[in-house]
Image (cartoon, rainbow, N blue to C red; front, side, top):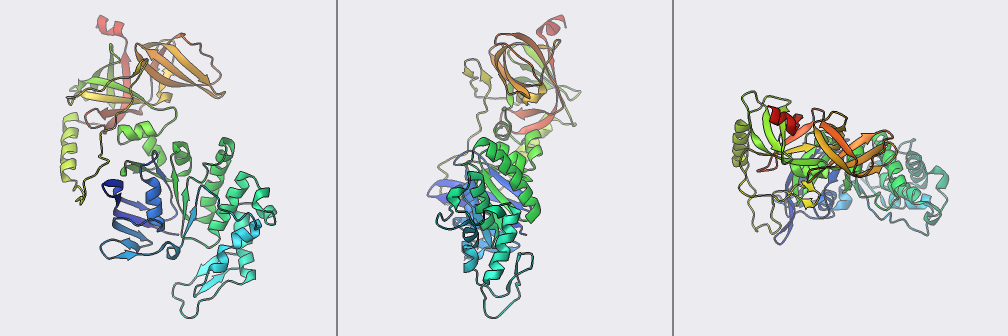
Length: 450
């Protein structure tokens, strides 16, 4: 339906940069979620694409046609961009039936070359000239029947919004948005007003809707579970700056920095500080958790020294935007949480290239009888299918997930090992991902024996 391209888009109010030099491409028929914490700029980005907010600088195109260009002075109004917008508030007319709510906007359509197929799909002839026409009552009814069938609300067409549940009202709002045949459907946290069970059901419906309509969906959320389950690609933003734009499993398995790793995943990733060097065989020998030794083996051949050189060259080559006004909300290095019994481990200055951060997803922390890590259960939260266990190792807290019906007692002594080849190694100096691989822990007794 539509390919969207943003090129160096910036939105600022005075010295506050809500969106900072954002460039990305949303492919036709994609389901892209704009994800990030509150105030990161995701809704502002959505509103700029839709035409509800005017960027300060940059260029936005839909299907190759510029809808905003600061240099050329182009700013196509929202009602001319043929986009649909779904808000948190359903905004249904309480005095109108569902049928009339869906048909409300269709009566205002007036275009040359406008027609409706027998199946109820609105068609537009871009080459048509002459007098603009409106849809007839019969054509509007065909459209209403079609979209109500898509979202499965045909039995409720003669009811009023007050007679529907929250999920049914949401479906009406979606049908009304789909009715005019928008090229792009924008959604700004549309499920936030629903209860947890209904949100899960509506996620499934939105996924099915995207598949059946073939439209381009752009979805704003701060819920990373919604982003992971719905999106074909996730655009993760922090402080107005794009952090990573990738497929959900790539963002989860290969996060580009510690912020991405921490934001995506529930339970959250474990961060472990390590200090050590890379050996001649390519592995990293690190001192971790006060008195343990860990050997990290990369899944690909890599030289730490060359990696740092590439990072420096890349940073030097990246042309920083010319700011007419200094950025008040300055970008700072993300302070990743290293969880301890007393809170968080304090970060220190003057970090060297031999300072690293290990990222271990909870599913890679395996409880077993002969594991090299010793600890005790700090808390255990069973949900039926799985149990989230927080384990104390010295002064540090690690989170693991145990699948199946297993009961743990607080204070219980256990042993663990770190499994899998998806362990992340980050540079502690800049927070960037170096590589992924495996991690082998050595028990203190083994170190002494060696």
